[in-house]
Image (cartoon, one colour):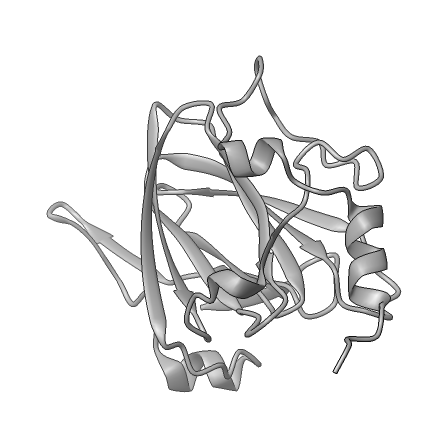
Length: 186
């Protein structure tokens, strides 16, 4: 297993060891001791499975209450997976990292807490599985526009993507920066 730091500190691309033969393949998709030895020591408490059709764009999402670190992998198809730094005070705030994840390259993307996450489906269908280190908390969920020019993600879209109503009404990164920099009222 190789763990490669992404272009933003704390974000990692994981290349798994895949053992292939005439019957197919075998891989170990997660081993807490091996990941901890490589700097990914989260205790994952929730697994999610998502299926989407070609042209679907999900994101950009995060939780401001009970933020989640995620370990994302594609088990069928291919996606362009993206993480955007929204850590208050980060020198990389608003910067993004994109990675092709597919059933053929077996790569994983480790998205630490304090990042937005989203993906665009490149294949006819795609299925993702991802581990989270905190349970889903809808009261803290936020969405930032996938096409926000202040982030400037170079999505490999061909035509208008299929997005949810929530994502159509998402806020800008500037509005998010203002929201997370305000002191919370007690």
